[in-house]
Length: 178
Image (cartoon, rainbow, N blue to C red; front, top):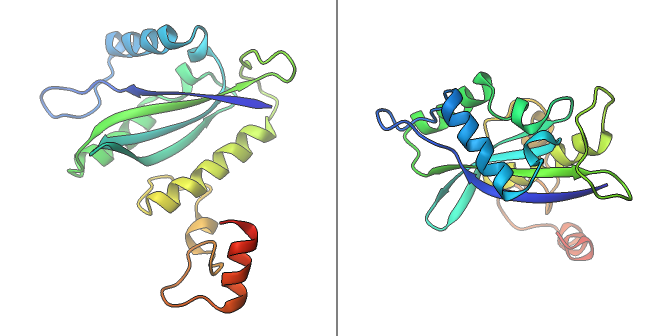
């Protein structure tokens, strides 16, 4: 499988409360922007990352997958917008953005259609992105797929405790390149 990354796509906000405001008109305009970037992108499946851009960088806040539904159907449901708005309502500053990792079919490299059949690669990419996002932002709002990443301690690689690494951990960190 091959994935292509698109974004960041800026999510529109309400002028009154500065939260993401996605009535049908704003939602349609947002997906028109996505389609202008790449035809049929909104109809494909893959993974997505919601983040806040500020100070020249983007901090990830949520990672999700669109496996059985398209990005257009999955990414901006009421539940997801509520999660994204919980970050904005907490007073954290930044411009809300969405990145889309679009899955393609093997060989043809055309966008994949959502399917009721499971795509193991989409779940793998989602878990991997969650691991990277948690490394950048321990306050990631994902609940599923995060317990192990939050509690597992592997010195030199994952949740390394403060203090000096053992010689073995330091050596293996160099060997593995992490």
